[in-house]
Length: 263
Ligand SMILES: [Zn+2]
Ligand SMILES: [Zn+2]
Image 1 (cartoon, rainbow, N blue to C red):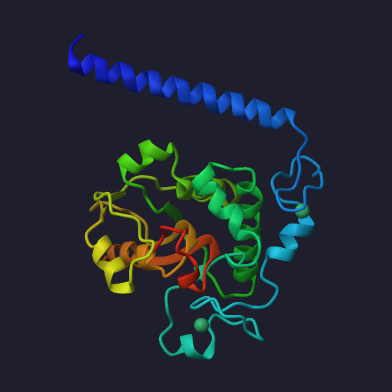
Image 2 (image 1 turned 120 degrees about the vertical axis):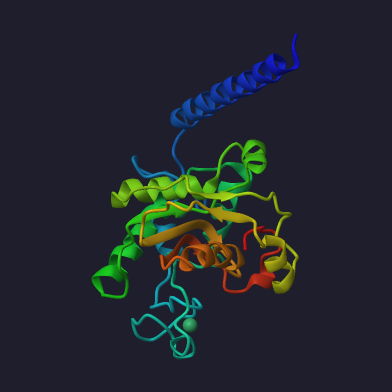
């Protein structure tokens, strides 16, 4: 058999097997009782993954600085320290360290997607709340942090794309999955210093010349030191495109996050 045909055939087989696996796990999941991942109480459909009590316990309960993620007394954009330099806004419904973090990690590492819709709805509630308070302007489009094609093939999905897709449905905003690409398969960011992280990601992404939007939300699952999103935002901002960052959780203490390979 010619090598090309062999390669195409094996790709098709792989895709078919993956489809069968997905359909069978979905069928299995829908036939099992729906229980909360944290407290194991049963959950009423259509909710899945995390019950409302556990969700409420894990979400932010005070105003949060959109720059550094610090808790604040009053609802404002930034804490006193961040007001001096007005950093890029990062919007998340919770801290990675407050109980929901494990399940956000499980989305990426175990393909455990049960908590994804409920966490996306919590993020949308926070976005809407900030917009009503006049602290946020909605973007024109949502852009997920891309995975390198090789990594995508290994993992089978891009968690940032799945989150962005859910958000685009909930907010009826266009999802732009093309235009921004990852051209280098960088090594995981875990365990690297700030300078090493930046060096590791240098020129890792490219942005198409004809990207047409002026205000975007860049979506990732977790934002730790923000190196990845900063590296991407730099490309947009060089073309005067406004960037805000949306994620399911932010990790304020990156030293605690050696298990994550985000930036
Ligand atoms: Zn629960
Ligand atoms: Zn701050």
